[in-house]
Length: 97
Image 1 (cartoon, one colour):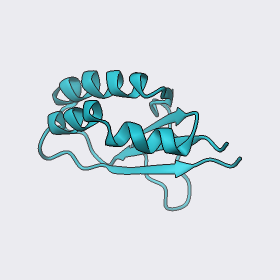
Image 2: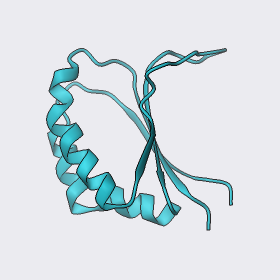
Image 3: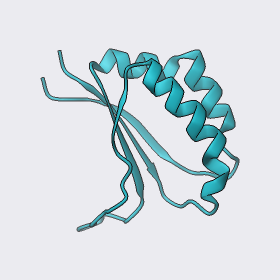
Image 4: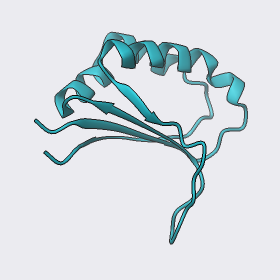
């Protein structure tokens, strides 16, 4: 079974402290869903059209598990805590089996 991944890119973060409530709730929801944080993008080298932005990569045992975690009540509560004005590019992708 192919793994599932959350890929989340934040083009700009003006005040990282405002993400504290979201981070706490999201972390708990991801762990409850079986997700594992692989990268928080502390060091990034961008090439071609790439942009140096905060990137999070989270792995799940399956694509279905990744989707179910996003749709879970716990993660939906985390999304409500995401501060206004934060832009992100969020995708759920299926790994290669």
